[in-house]
Length: 153
Image (cartoon, rainbow, N blue to C red):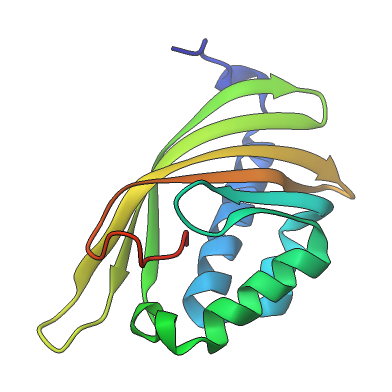
């Protein structure tokens, strides 16, 4: 278990990190590729052992995003909503922060909303131009409704 480090991170920086996480969620919920790319550093990494695999850099991230939002395979997941909770600051250094959080991903269905997946995010952020950006986002899906089909979201 990590040491408590939130006291070394200003309230403003905590809010900026949360804003980055929320913008990621919104981009995935609405299909906003520009916003999606804007929350990653230029050489940022998106890693999901059970989903997209490891993708690095804006070009590759953009290609993966396009596949997710154009492939019929993932159509039932579009229009869903991410809910991130239990944000814990595990490592705080000047210009670098690492966090752990949990999430659920809810999708629409004819019978009402359904939880499609749940898991954890392990994030590393870097500070660039007064913004905190993902240097690495690792998504571990702990359970989903369609094993082997749901991409890391």
